[in-house]
Image (cartoon, rainbow, N blue to C red; front, side, top):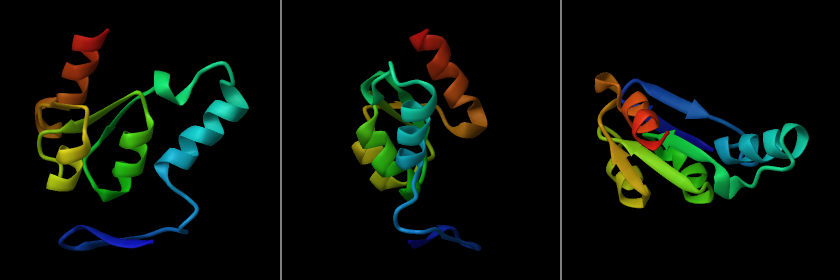
Length: 92
């Protein structure tokens, strides 16, 4: 997989590796009693879409790209304005 995450960044990873597969491995090996539907995940870019769709609550920061904003269950403030912390505080 190859994609441009910023104007000067190109990210490359094997097609079988993603943030969602990392969550799957962690749940299987470390937390088998927890379902992926009980997970909250945050994202802002293309490589977060699969993960945000798979978890119980997919949250995009306000400055995420349009594709991520479109699939997110919730949108929080931007990453520069502590959006993740604000959403965690609101949820828990």
